[in-house]
Length: 108
Image (cartoon, rainbow, N blue to C red):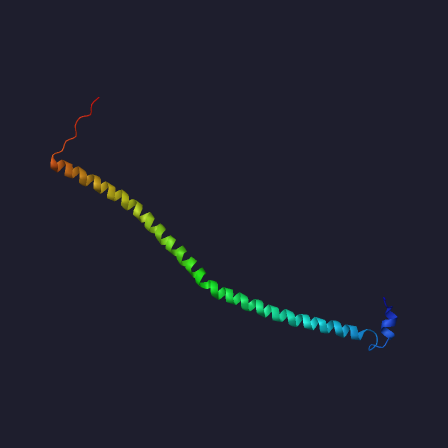
C-alpha cells in the first residue's frame, strides 16, 4: 500500500490518511498522559521510601561515628594499659621489698 510521492502531493489531505494520523497522535497523547500519571506515582513512592528510610540512614551514620570514637578510645587505652601494668609491677616490687620478701635462689 505504498503511495507514490506524486499521489501524496496531489491527493486531498482530508481523504489521504489524515484520519489515521490523527488517531495515531491521539494514541500518543493518551500514552503520554498514562506515562505522566505513572511517573507521578513512581515519584511519590520514591519520596515515601526516602522519608521512611531517612531515620535508618541517619542511624547508620551515627553508628559510623560511634565506631570512630570507640576506635580512638581503643588507641588511647592500649598505652594506658601498658602504663598501668608497669605501675602495678613497680607497686608489687615495692610492696615485696617493704615486706622483706626475698626470692629464693633457683635450683640448678
